[in-house]
Figure (cartoon, rainbow, N blue to C red):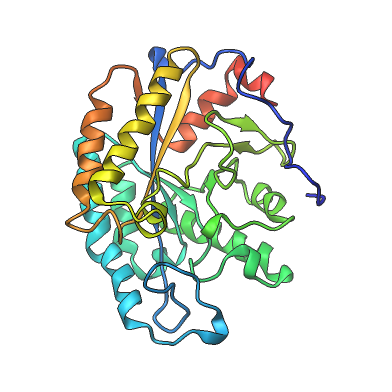
Length: 300
């Protein structure tokens, strides 16, 4: 991508677009994105408040913060799986490829449950924007290859660790077979980028209805995060009666997978899924429907 003042897509205000129709007249396409991540004990860890610690100042091993995240893959992710399954939700898991190496049991269970697995870097300790430029392409392709080998499915989607990209990321992802990207949190409907072969699709993701910012940055309580999920749905559901909307919920096993927080997701899904006109989808299912629609022509 050539550096520019605006993104690799045309500006399209939501007002005046043609109507987007979801299957069976649904108003909202709901997808849940568990971020299944891996950090090495001998590498840099985020701090107590999930802040980024400069590598030169990091203390290794950081047992306190490493073990919190290890809880997510030992316990929390299984709690998320059970809760989502009770509401008929399959995850679209943004997965560090090192999870395949160190926690293959997690990958096997996601596959068994029919979850989609997205690319999410090799590890969350190193973002694409923090790598040496000559290392980025190889890292992306290794991540995609590793997930495909372990899960049997080549990732169609990608969420960068920390939503980090460089000017070259989208070309490398397209080369690796990725069809949609979730880093650009600027819409409530999918749109087509002017980059990639075939062109990449941007699928709505969220940094708002996302447990890490909610609890760490916004300092929300568990009931407040539950209310946020429900309020987000109420607005999108109302607007979706006119033209379909996408609602993303982003959760992390070490955060929402905690015993005292899981009820927020459980209650919110009970509320949301109790409405008619909610399409419980994976990211790739949403993108496939979008690509086959007349709406996509207007958003290309």
